[in-house]
Image (cartoon, rainbow, N blue to C red):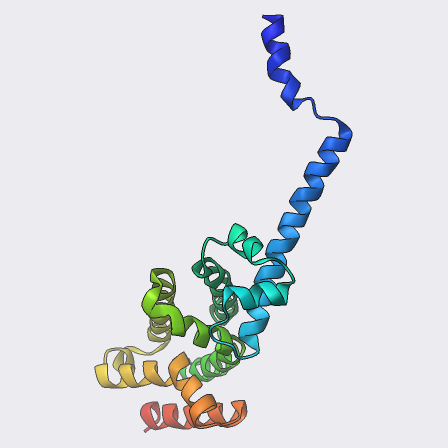
Amino acid sequence: MALRVSVHLKPLDASPEALVEQDGRRRRSLDSRARIVAAMLELVHRGDVDPGAEQVATHARVGLRTVFRHFKDMDSLYREMSVVIEGELAEVVRQPLKGQTWREQLDDLIDRRARAFEKIGPYKRASDVHRHSSPLLEANHARLTEGSRANLKRLLPPEIANSPLTLEALDLLLSFEAWSRLRREQRLTPRRAREVIEAAVSKLVDS
């Protein structure tokens, strides 16, 4: 019995040097993963909506095999990117909206979404490029869209929330897609884009 216990314990009886080496390998592995994720996010932030594994590896200064050792495919990297998107948008709903009336709170929601959309713009556009081939990104997009709509509907008074045409128009105006169109295709500044949305919303709810 004692012999069997001794045999079982022997592999676990690592020397201090071996433990240090194991810890060093783990730290290097975690460091490589962090560098890969950071490289991916930086490339996307620069405007590359579809960086390949080789680009990520070069930017992170790691081997291509290292990229795929940490991430089985690029979808795994986009999962990390989704964390950034969801983290920024969480700030929109985390704090209570400012204002005493629903109308004042709607103005605050417009401002918060404008700031959040501006931050996540590069990442969301990159995500949208791959949505057709990624169930993960498609699910994240659906969750974002549904959550944003529900958040808006809770804010509105019944006469507006229950008006299909007005609700749909507001949901469109306060969407990321509308913001991206104003910023990219129409080339408006963030301030001007927000003013356009505010004016359109006012036409809908203040008339």
